[in-house]
Image (cartoon, rainbow, N blue to C red):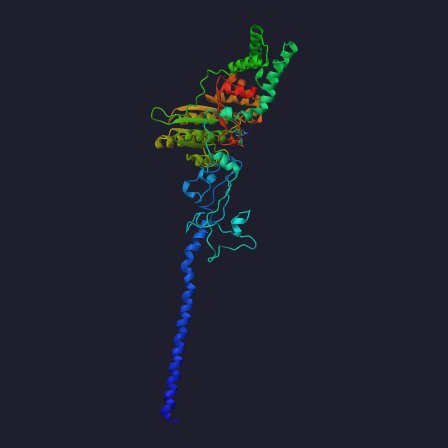
Length: 470
Ligand SMILES: Nc1nc2c(ncn2[C@@H]2O[C@H](COP(=O)(O)OP(=O)(O)OP(=O)(O)O)[C@@H](O)[C@H]2O)c(=O)[nH]1
C-alpha cells in the first residue's frame, strides 16, 4: 500500500469521524430543545395551578351565617344558579369559612355543552382541602383532557341568606319564630277566655299567665281591667269573640300610635347618625349589621363605626358585615378610645357624603359607672360632627327583668330613642315587649327573631299580637 493511499484512508476516516461528531452534537441539542418545549406550554399548566389557589374559585361559605359579598368577577365562571346569587352569606360572630373548590381551568374556557365534564380524582373527593390525596395527581397532567366547568353545590344555608328579604311583612313571615311565646301567652290566654264564664280563679289564672310571659305587674293590671270591662259590656259567646277582644286589648297595650320609624336618613346635608348601645352579648353588632343590610337594600349608603374597641372580635365581626353589604368600616386599635373611633367614623361619613353612619358601641356592663360615662362621651364627641339622630338600645328578650334594669341605666346616660328587642325567637316571654315600652316610654322599633341576616323585623303591634295568638 502506497503512502498516498494511507493518507487518503486517514483523511476519509477523519472526515467520517467529524461528520459523526457534528451529527451527535446536533442531535443532542435537538433533544435539549425538545425538553424545553413543555416549558413553553407551562402557562397553561400554570393557569390551572393559579385557579386552584382559591383566590378566584373559592366562594366563601359560612355556616350558619351569611358569607361575604364577593365581587361578581370572583365567582367561578360557569357558576350555578346558586352561585349566581350574591355571595352574601356569613354569620357575623363566626369568621367566614372559606371552602376551596376544585381548580377549574380558565385558560381555555369551555362550557358543559361543548365539552363533557371529565372525571378528575380531585374533583370527586368530598374533602376538598385543595391538597392532593393518596393516589391523586399533584397537578392535572398536561396531556389529560381538559375538564369543563364543575358545578359546585353551595350549602343550602348560603343560598337561603343570599337574597335580601323585603322588610315589609317580615314580622308576619317570621311569626313562626315566636312559637314559644305563642304557646305560653297566646294559647294560654285563649284557652282561659274561651272557656266560658270566668270566675275569680280564672281571672287569677289570666293574671298569672300575663305575669309569666313578662308583661310586668302594671301592664298585666291594665290588660286584665280592660278585658273584664269589655267582656262585661259586650259579652263573649264564641272563641272568636274572645280572640277578637283579647287582640284588641293587647294591641292597645302596645301603643300602636307610637312613632316606630328608625331615624336613619340624611338631613341638612349630613348623614344620619345612629348609635347602637347595650350590654355585652345582647346582639348589638349583629343588629348593626342587619340594619346596615336593610339600609343598603333600600338604596342607602352606609358607613359603619366599630366603636366597640373593648372586644377586638367585635370590630372584625362588624367589618365582616360591612364587607357583605359593601359598607366601609372605620375601626381603631384594640383598646383605643371608643369616642375617638366614633368621632372618626362620623367625620369620614360626613366627608364621604354617606346617608347613614351606624356606630356599634362597646357593650359595657351597666354596673360600671365610669364605663357608662364613656358612652355619654361617645355621644357628646360625635355631636361635634353631626347630630345623633337615633340611639337604639338593644335588649336581649331572654334576660327578662335584668334587661329592664339595664334599660333604666342606659336611659340615664343617653337619650334612648328606640329599642331593639333581640332573641325573641328564643323565649316564651315575649311579653317583655309590653313592659319595656311602658317602663321607658320609648317605642320598640325593631325585633330580632333569629341569627340569620334577615331576622330583623320592624316591630308592628298588630302583627306581633296576631303572631302571639296564632
Ligand atoms: N337567636 C338569636 N340570636 C341572636 C339574635 N341577635 C343576636 N343574636 C346572637 O347573639 C350573639 C351575640 O351577638 P353580638 O351581636 O355579638 O352581641 P354584642 O352585643 O355585639 O356583643 P359584644 O360585642 O360582646 O358587646 C350572637 O351569637 C348572635 O348571633 C336574635 O335575634 N336571635
